[in-house]
Length: 555
Image 1 (cartoon, rainbow, N blue to C red):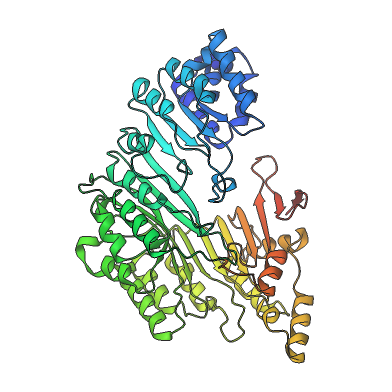
Image 2 (cartoon, helix red, strand yellow; image 1 turned 135 degrees about the horizontal axis):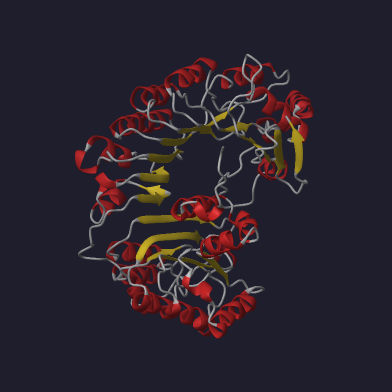
């Protein structure tokens, strides 16, 4: 005769561990737990409030401050539950324009948050993702009340780009023992004002004693105006920029590095304060056309990356010479072979380049460790420089050589008959452990770029007329093709993403060409995902980017 076990008889530690997993996956699900009974209420409430978000956006700042003031006035016990705080606000690119007049930030709005920090007892992390410089009052509060907490700076910014050397807030951040990650994204080319953001950012990275993750990326603001500075002004700015240099950087163990523009000189500078043999994640890398970064990291043992697990690289040289492009690919193959066994690899290759040499290195050195693989070429507007997709044989080799592969992204160019795509779908069904699949499909923009000849215009209209849009029916047709195995059983695929057209094409200065404008108006993104509900295993969510309603369909 079986005896019933009451909830009170369960091990509290195990129950808390389960609730922590639920908190990380779906925090809102904890609301149902809180309302279930008194026992679950007492256990779940601290977990529900362990992560707290303070939204300082203009329309929510007053409510956020009022909420904190009520905690302080009423002596709310939830203050003892908080372990992680995130401060967020307007993204920085809404205001980081050099032609705007930058005013000194108002520090009075942080008074309530400083008081909350003084009342917390076990704060583990503090993430600052607001669109201002990290205020000294918050940094001092962290150092005084939570010296062992981890500080994460998202969207790092300065009072203004041309602020000279010696900013007290930047010096305090650079020497903060709490700082663990530093993220900065800079928009360049928006005015003639001096720009010391890169120099100030690098100075903080070099001086920080406990920094573990660095992300420094940038993009051009575009436009048709170019600013040229007089020689005397350039000399004065270079003199000021040298003041940010650090004579004795503090060596540290950086685990994650994200940097879009990098060359051999930058790698040597990084090695002055980073232990390169401890780096595990290198993302968003775009090596220089000279390939000196790849050559140095691939051939010089002092700059090898043996601990690397995640690599994300864009091999997009500006040169049109075939020799220089092949030289970069050869250098990358040597670098890739020198890396330790990778678990995640993402490559964006210059259009019209064969995947054969790179794929050979991948299968020889990383096939048994890879869990995520992305191989993509940007769709070209030139009919004589079309992108090269993986062949069916190459895709079959990946299937047979990468047993642990769970995430895959690849290019499939569409055809009028649709037979080529179906052949790829048949091979994709053979990936037994695949859980997430991304397919980059073309828009046929090569037919849009040169519509002057009658034959080209006819081909353009014919091809575009047969190219279906990514509506729910189209997404479901592809889903059914790639999620079924030969025996009629459903594969383990849980998510399919379709990218029709280039989603993140980099635009240079000047007015965009007509085909660029057309691509931006026609590109689409679709996602098909299996329902997370156990009682509805055959239902999927279909989400189409572009303002269309989200629908739920049955497989």
